[in-house]
Structure formats: structure tokens, C-alpha cells
Image (cartoon, rainbow, N blue to C red; front, side):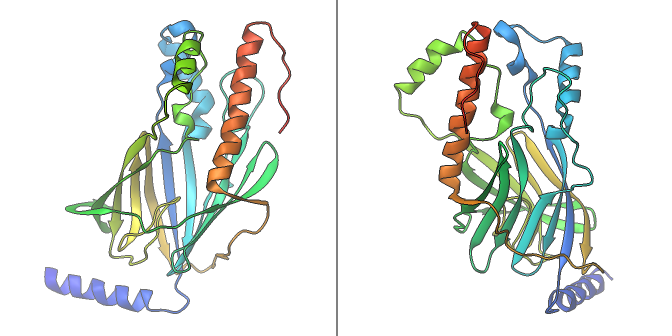
Length: 285
């Protein structure tokens, strides 16, 4: 009976993915955890009440829902606009979402094209990425995600320097250390990525930047972030327009990262100056 079921499932997959106009939609939930003590002043520990206050304030940035629309070789990945929470200015807590918007990520695994349409400080950018084949290590370990049997794969990659989960409130005792660090050669931090993919959906795609496995990626674990697929619709009645974005200033990922890093450093310095009674003005972008 199990052999018959496997045969039927394989036959259905061949028929489904053999269609010329095949398309699918996957819903992903993303959740990031951070060390809230990084926001404490003067090295003090936060109370549980204060931690909860910060968590509630940052929930819209730490917990998100994304939609991946995909066909055999291309995909669009963007935050669910209906669930995206608006930012508010009614308090003075730590903010991240007001500076940049989560962009729309486009990937074409056949033509090796990766673009992200994003916005930073009100300016639109079209960021291009290199699409080199990821060096995944495949494992025999499996687990079930919904109705799909998934296999494990791992990857070591450079950490995203713009990952806000690593940001922290500047502290006075950090000044000397940061000055010493500038005199040393900076080492690129690396992170372990664990993916779970299903050959039952034989498209080499996945959430965000991830692709390159013999099946759709249903779960990603990277550092303190987990992205999990909660729903899949194959050949939906309403087809999505999977097209490369074209609006925004064209820029490479490397240059965009330098631009954002420089601006965030200016903001950090201005924050420190305000604490010392210095100039309250911000640099122009």
C-alpha cells in the first residue's frame, strides 16, 4: 500500500510540475529573537517588565509574514501587505522599521538574476545580487512539514552586516573598544544556515535569498531567525505576475550595504552626541 501511495504521489507530481503554466504560492512566517539586554543603558540588566515592553514595541519587526510566488525558475518574495503593521512615533523606544522597508526580492535561477526593490530613508533602490550556486551540504535527515517530507541541508555563509538583530544601543564603555577595533583587520562573521526542502515540489527556490536545492525550501534557520512555510497552494486560480522589479536607483549589493552602514553609523554617532549634549542634527542622505 505504501509503495502504491508513493507511486501515485510521484505520478501526480510529474503531471503537476510538467505543466507549462505551472505556478505556486507559499506563505512563510518569519520570527527573529534578539538579546534585549543589548538595549540596556550602562550595562544594566533590563527588568522583565521592560523586556516585555520592548518586545511588544518591536513585534512587527521581529515577526513577519511573507508570500513567495514561484514558477519553475523564477520567484517573487515579499511581505504580506495586509499584515504589515504600520510604524508609530508615539514613543521613544528603539526603532528599526522606520529607516528602511522590507523590499520585494526577485530571483531567476535559470538566468541567474537576483534583484531586490527596497527603500531606505525614503529613497528607492534596485539592488542586484550575484547568484553563484550555493554550496549546500545535503544530509539524509528528514522531517515532516505539513504534508511534505523534507530533507536537511546546511550551508556556511557570511553573516548579513545589516541584520538588525545584532544591533545594540551604543554604550560609553564601547567607545574605547570600537577605537581599538578600527586598528585591527575586520574579520567577516559567518553563520550556519539550516534548510529543509521537499523534493515533492521540484523547484530550486525558497524564501528570501535562498535557492539551489532539489526541491522547494520550506524552512530556514539562520542565526536567531527561523522562516517556516505554513501554507502552499499549487496552481492557484489567481496567477501572480512574477516579473523583475525595475524601479529605483540601480546599485550592487556591496555598494548598498556600504551606503546603509555609513548612514547607520552617522545616526549612531548623532545618538551619542545627543547624550553628551552635542549637535542634534542628522546628516543628510
